[in-house]
Length: 368
Image (cartoon, rainbow, N blue to C red):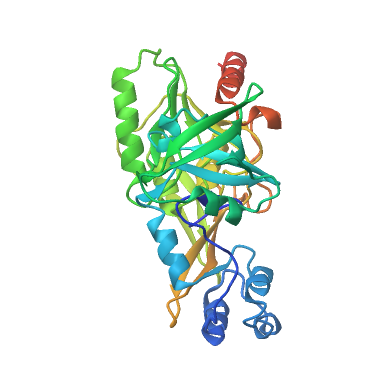
């Protein structure tokens, strides 16, 4: 279940949503005809052509993508180590924002998280698209790049960042010290749940905060990932047997998912969410909100509670299409609407973690 926002890119590689190669159209039509969650009409399938595939595919399935073999290899590689500045890039309208990974080159250089990028090596990025910005940021391992950013409190600052091989963590522990705060960026099957459990076990043993202090999970940069990993993570905080949701497929298929047995974490939960919180991250957050196990703080989320699968085609390209929808325990879904936070903050507060933590503290005082 890949929930990648159309604006979000890894700086190691650039993935395009356009189809710049000749794809096997009849195979694509057959896959969509037999497996798409909501079966398309034959007229829509017949309208697919090599020239309009990217746009017409979206008309049939708004979340569908076609990747060339090279693009798909780059997508897979981006989940592992890559050479770059140790940050992600998103375009907020036309404004480029850097999402800094802990331990990467940008973090060690002191670049603040979620800052506006102004210049690369003295050249303005104003008016550039994401591909052009990524091209300027790329470079050889061991080289440096000079970034000019707009600081949260006003003014600008220059940073010299080393390009190096880097593998971002799926779960990061974020200081400052008095808060139990972790960030989840991706939901990777078989990886994120044990990483989060190990992280929370460590925080539980070492934290100086009171046991009743909430755990804050930052999902602002969580673009999606594996659906069942999201269920497994939610199950860590809910009693065994609790209904987590329903996975709905085509032709009446429906499967109810329950929390597994095992040790559970019982501390209060606050989840930080925003417009880039999508797909598997929304499923995780929605389950915990609907079961009143967690409160959401931030801005409304992306609105994509569906699952996708990848089909490799004869020419090596890959079709990604929607095959399942996720319903929350009450039977509703977030698709098309997103999740509404329990505490909605202003847009200009979303990039300031200290400000968000202040809002969390105020919310907790009002809702002990």
